[in-house]
Length: 190
Image 1 (cartoon, rainbow, N blue to C red):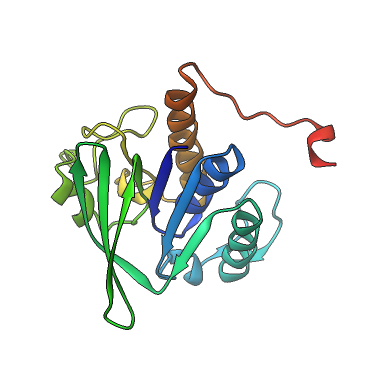
Image 2: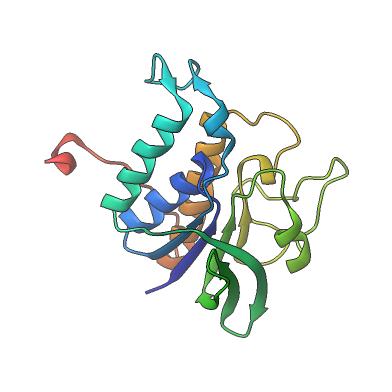
């Protein structure tokens, strides 16, 4: 089973994690809790009339946890490097202990902090964000950038969540060897 590591726990990262875990991929998400959503209030998110940003994040975390995402709090990703088999991801916990993880895919959902993606060798646009394809893949194969990491503007939560879903569907398409669509019917919810 492929392993996806997601760096960032805002709408983009949580959305990517929901799709990859829901569809059977091993998914680890590093969430420092520093998403801009803690400063937001949602009035413009489809299906949500009015919602505090922190409550939205709490609900989204609960949902991805239920789908099987291994969500790691309090562990900062310090480096991502390419290996022969994918990626090596180094972290450091609040306790100062370092750890390393291996992944087949990495998704950067780090907001405007684009340093990790740049250090990996992902190309940037003239405006500064990480350059991505329509499927959110960077110039480094199997590395993706979503939300504000890949956008100079249009940082709304709903757009970021869509970016995360697009990256996840591309990863799932690669794993399936054909275009993958995640379309549920009412019977799926039972």
